[in-house]
Amino acid sequence: MDTDELIGTLSRGAGPAPRVSLRRAFGWPLAAATGVSLAVGVLLLGAVPADQFATSAPWIKLAYTGPLAMALGIAAFAAGLPARRLRPALSAAAMLVALMAGLGLTAWLTAPPSARAAVLLGADGSWVGCAPRVVLLALPAFVVAIAAMRRLAPVRLRAAGGLAGATAGACGAFAYAFCCPESSAAYVALWYTAAVAACGVAGALAGPRLLRW
Amino acid sequence: MTGVEPADAFEASLAPLWRRAQAGDEAAYRDALRRMAARLRSYLRRRLAERPDDVEDLVQDILIAVHVQRRTHDPALPVSPWLHAIARYRLVDHWRRHGRRDALHDAVDDLDDWPAEDAPHEAAAARRDLGVLLARLPAAQRRAIELTRLEGMSVTEAALHTGASVSAIKVQVHRGLKRLAAWVRPDAGGRPPAD
Image 1: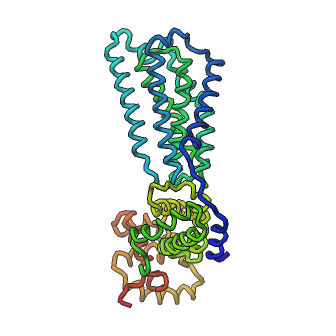
Image 2: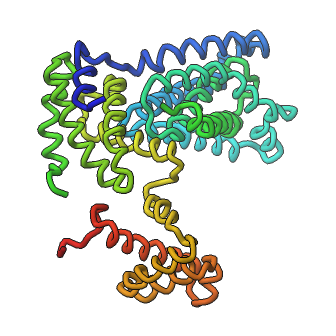
Image 3: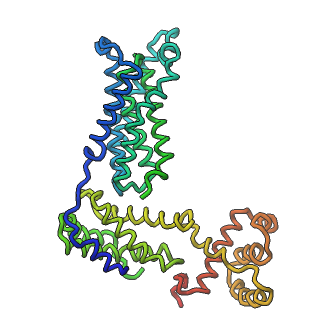
């Protein structure tokens, strides 16, 4: 077909361009996926006792993973649009991680030497299960985030996949915060972040395969 | 580079059209796509010099992508970086579909198909013509091509033979072949402006 004919075909009756929105592309779908993960987590792993919410522990987890999911989600959305800058949202995410790392380090340093291992690794080696459980609970958000990314136009597939994955990881961590009995900030800084990073790596590996258009 | 607008002039001429096009103005959309097509043609001609037949196909491919993805353009941002990002993505995808790793390997891939071992008499004739051209190359490039392409040495053997590094031999062969190809095929765009 002649290029001018093609242009005629494309423009005929094209109408106004539809708009993409962060909320519709990522916000609502990921919120729904996180709700599913929360339900699965509570059913499978059990919720933390309600009186825990009188302490700061679950609130720290939620205050870390919630904003982290938002910052990473904004960065993922930007990665889905050609020529959009990722930096502002990425720096916000990096600041959250740094802040949490600072809190964790403080908790670890102020703990009595005999308790330091438990502060970092949790009670009875619970660290072994933490990151895998977060990854498991991130699965619904992972599927949703990759599907949302496929409806956009990512031009850097690894970055887009990585950010979609990390966003899903943060959603999974948010849901897991309702089921996690550990209370130390060092534990959260280390294992929650590791789980988010693992989901990001999985997304970056899958990106070129799943997101090509 | 005749007829290529500077980037900011292109943006200035496209942006108002694109704004109206995105709002639903069909004529403005058609004009915007035409301007994009012209821009893409010159962008791709420089990058697909060895496959000129692919240029128009890829222009159309990118225009379709622009159309399908037009909702992904943020009206607060300029159009040309958005167009460029899509064009580059489709170009890389095109190379991938045609078995290339990246732009830097283009010339090598094509020139590697040079007949090094034809039938003997053809080879003799070719060698005579080639000798004239080779004599015009810088000595290092000539030597590297003679060893690897005419005497059949591997790059490693040629490196041992001359004392140069393997990558230096590769670079000399690449540059030399590129220069030869430009002399043989002036239409490929390699001829110096003096001609």
